[in-house]
Amino acid sequence: MLRRVMLETRLLPATAAGIAEAARLLAEGALVAVPTETVYGLAADATDGRAVAGIFGAKGRPSFNPLIVHLADCEAARRLVAFDPRAERLAAAFWPGPLTMVLPRRPDCPVSELASAGLPSLAVRVPAHPVARRLLALCGRPLAAPSANRSGQVSPTRAEHVMAELDGRIDAVLDAGPCAVGVESTIVGLADGEARLLRPGGVAPEAIEALIGPLSRATGGTIEAPGMLESHYAPARPVRLDAATAKAGEALLAFGPPPQVGPATVVLNLSPAGDLAEAAANLFAHLRALDRPEISAIAVMPVPQQGLGLAINDRLRRAAAPRPGDKRPS
Ligand code: TXA
Ligand code: MG
Image 1 (cartoon, rainbow, N blue to C red):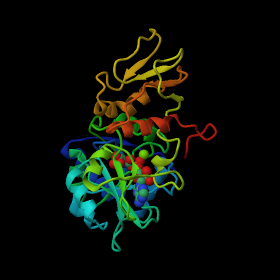
Image 2: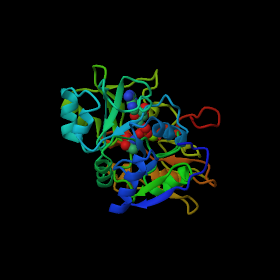
Image 3: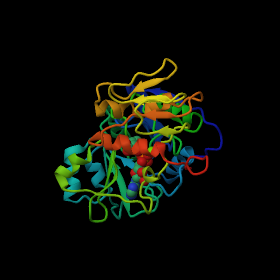
Image 4: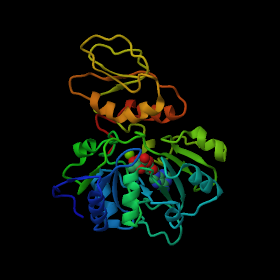
């Protein structure tokens, strides 16, 4: 589908009729943003190379970045990739849910080569969101879906976030309200021997290690996941980490009991009670809400580095990373 012309992006309700319409559009090769428990994904039929190409175009995403393919159940995933005993154990424990596994593609895998960017591996996930599950069951085909944001920007946790960046560039948004988890799935690489944590996310690495033993942590070098680009998930305004409080002109992203600030300072709290799951669910929406032209920077209070805190700190560190020139990564 050519993306040069502006499309009329339809907002579909997450009713039986809305989900059926989304499934019909996807079968025709359209691009539809869909809710998952982590963030909204920009979905297309993963077996349709032209539709998958449309995702890269709409996001402005570098084409070397492979996509996650979403399936209705574990059976459907087994048809695309080769499971090993570790994958079986993780699927049994965490699917449906916020875990993505990178596994070897089967020789007869029908997914477009473009979705895995020519790699011999494929990232697969069975999402838990009831609307995503109903849609996948209705579609009866794998859906490639990266987060539904322009490349390099903050991931969307509400339909309005998707519209703000992709209105006119995609066919529809299926609106099911805010996402419960709020950070993307944890990605575990199992395709080449050792188990590797490619991206921290909605499942705590400790819970994975309890089942399959230690995960090796990806080190720099070649980019295996765009989440591994240093500057990513970036708001327009600078982000200052480990802040005890906000300086004049800054907005404050608090965690736990907030410090006293002047009346001019805008404060949003990830979780006043210090709950990491609540903080993850609020992270991207709060970053977006604080990213206002009148502030000089977003000051962020420290978040504990454990459980979901790993994913939260990973996203915050990338949001604060030096940006090449004045430009976001494309
Ligand atoms: O929670 C999520 O994972 C969301 C929702 C929509 O499911 N999706 C998401 O997709 O975050 P995306 O495209 O923004 O991030 C997918 C990550 C990328 O960093 C990509 O490089 C990595 O998965 N990935 C995909 N296929 C891979 C492969 N074959 N090998 C290594 N990394 C891969
Ligand atoms: Mg993304």
